[in-house]
Image 1 (cartoon, rainbow, N blue to C red):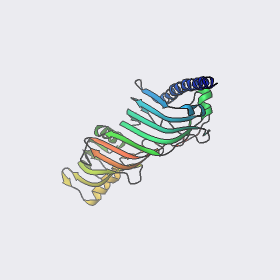
Image 2 (cartoon, rainbow, N blue to C red):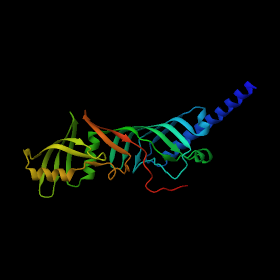
Image 3 (tube, one colour):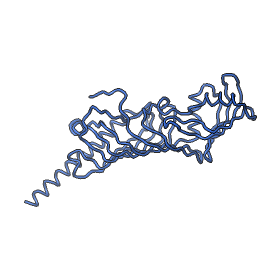
Image 4 (cartoon, helix red, strand yellow):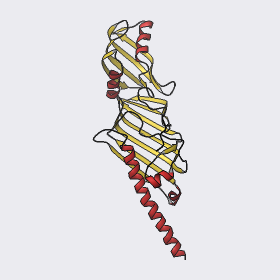
Length: 268
């Protein structure tokens, strides 16, 4: 009898394992369908135990690279079943374009995510219904920020960006409201509200000369926010930046991360 029970339990684990492989493949295909680019790569890996039979998953890792997207590839739909549980969701996205911004890396670890277990088992579709809040990091290169500034700000005609020693150095030519000039800005980048990156504690030169208070205000009003995470990148509140590092040509933003609710829920 004991051997029979062990054999039955082992068979259930094997069946569960096959379901896990199907889950991984279906999830990867579902995410890939929301991304663009001929070279896109998406992989999903799940770490499970016997509890997977009841929809309890230890961990899920999502890796994606070399893609383009106009927004998040993953949302929650709170109206769906919360029966499935992913105890730890890890995301590692590299070398991708989020609207007009190229991102070197976005990584996040999010606990306690719920998903529609019946939909996953019966239709091989992965839909999250709830997200926990975890920690994340975004890495952007100085050349990527340079190209983003040119695409976002019509006033800026030429620009060069350097990032080092906790500061961003911006040199270029701009046609502002009351003056057209070569300019230099040395500043820190801060996120006072968590969702916007702004130039702060700035020193500004026009044609190599310090500017008056009104001219400095004019430039900062034209350039801030440098990046609006929700308006420019359509992140829907997914990231709340708490700390920014500026060093060795990289902008590294740390903060809280969660999977936001879909802007318009569509149950299918």
